[in-house]
Length: 464
Image (cartoon, rainbow, N blue to C red; front, top):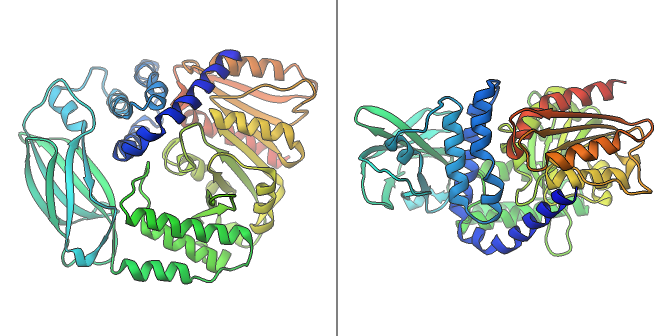
């Protein structure tokens, strides 16, 4: 336990020390997020022990690289792990060079009157070998349908600037795609999302003028969060993932009209917020379609140190938590940096949540936060899920008969402390704890691997 706490403390210290570095490496942070998603797509469903072991070895240094600010090494580790999902050997020199490149735009939100978009092709991390690459830059719809070829390139000196013509396109969400080839063989592709808008001043004015569904702190904080986020995006700020303008507009529509705007078949996700002393505290939510007619169970998901609420929607199995919630008709709430009992009660008051069916899950530091919440507010929590992290149960504390699912990888640096917590917890009378160790899985991929089994466990609990 002490070893895990020491490592967690070290991680938090690294976050504080590296914060200025992260601010200077927004594009690298974005590239790490993009590569994480690409890795998870190829990693899904792999059972081969040899491949799992190879991938685990690639990813073991990931946590240290991240918290020490070596985002370029994070990106490289994810690229190599993705390659090993299908190949046992290392990638060839030209393939490794192509993977190491990135495509970026001067801004993610562009007014159509600008007529051109400025792009840059650069290296995210150094490679030993380089070679001649041909590039084809084009713009497509988000479903992949190509709209227009923008440029044909020879990738030589880096970084390389490209000015692309967007005249004649309409407002909406698009992908910029860079296809790379060596000779006649395609070796890699890089995609980024951009939003084309007609008039940014009108967009800002419309968002500020939106009338809220309810005059209450939760709804007011959501509006303040969205307008602030739009301002950051318009200034060119980059995040760990794509934030399309459409998501902001739809979120503001929810704040204005409430449940009426939720998709009747697929449900909908929104960006909201809790009131904060200095600024709103961002929260990302998914509301299933059935919540329009009845109160539903909710999963409160707490992320690890250095991450954000977006991990549960974009990563951890390319948004597997959201899919699992949607399949069951459950709501998903992912707050940034934890949640208080007052904020949980605020959610229950403002949204169609069944207060008797509140589930908490967490990864790494978020697992410790989820455990702490459950111990301190046991009457508020129906079931608990811990992944790659845990904590300690105090002398005067008890989980009682609360159902708890604990998942950890055999290669996770937190394995020993998580296993010890589970062993101690199972000694308590009336415990309902299930502990699962997953062979050849490390810290960053445990969520993707264990979530389906964890949610099956929750489903059985809620049916009783």
